[in-house]
Image (cartoon, rainbow, N blue to C red):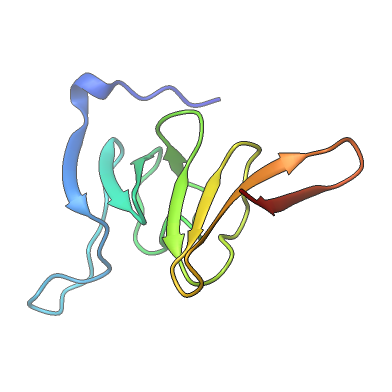
Length: 104
């Protein structure tokens, strides 16, 4: 388990891959970003990869809320997903036999 101090962290706003100049964004340890309505903190230096694709991003809080038209990758129990193309709200559950998104 990696411990990151929030006192040394910096909120950088929305996650982005490139600066307006076209230069690739590098996130340092402790960088906090907003991605799909969720706050994430970097636990290592990140040269590329969104919180959906890079395991060095850790969500802040117990559950995450996603606003997108496809199912979020790697959901955790309690995560909420608003399907922006259908307008339906789902939560990720473990019913003892399967783990899945169920419509609310």
